[in-house]
Amino acid sequence: MLVFNLYPVYFAQIGFKEYNVTMGTNLSLAHWVGLSYIKEFLNSPDFSNVMINTIGISFFKLLVGFPIPIIFALLLNEIKQSRFKKFIQTVTYLPHFLSWIIVAGIMLIWLADSGLLTKALYHMHIVDDTSNMLANANYFWAISVISELWKEFGWNSIIYLAAIAGIDMELFEAARIDGAGKFRQIWNITLPSIAPTVVLMLILSISGLFGSNFDQIFVLRNAVNAPASNVIDIYVYQQSFMYNRFDYATAVGLFRSLVSAILLVGANAFARRSTGNSIF
Image (cartoon, rainbow, N blue to C red; front, side, top):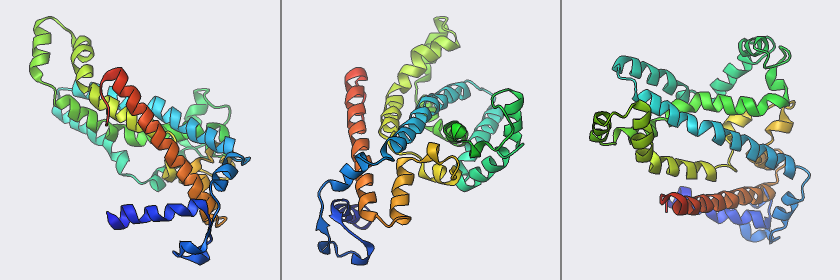
């Protein structure tokens, strides 16, 4: 923990110094510049585009990707045929084990000119032509949200299935005796029982609004869709390894981490006051 967690924190000071890679780990050679890099980022012409893309993609991932694993877990729990249930679980869990580079390869083929998905969406009148959808910035947010949902919703449902499995079955039996149907049992027993887990996952998801999925965006982006795919993690990567501005990139990364921490504390405080459940 000292080597991989605490020692790297020492180098966070790079974000407040005029640093270049020739200095190596001798940070005493670098001059303090205070918050000038943070101010530079806030006044940068790229700031609005980066922030809109980061928050926009993360918000729609939260809006779509958060409730669907809960709904899927509730539906899966109602399947009584164990073989069919295991088949559904296996099919939905498998995409999680694919790396994003493999998923990107699938997307490149299916969303190419006259690709399988492109033609299907065209015939459903969702898109206007059969041109490469990844070469159109207007579609990038939707592609990002849907591809992550397809890859992770089955896996994300596991924690809700575990929470449902811990519910006392006598509660369902008593509800059935009282004449409660499936929907009433889910509404009055299942959902209140897994509420602490849902709140916990929601707090963690909100704290990640400033942290886009770097792997996914990196492999799906290109020069054409850059106006819609230039998120803060990609911006930090470009400043570090394309322009060798490690000091500026570190400052932007620290800014992102600070905002994420504020969101975590704020979401946790709101959840504690409104539901009585919180992380800390």
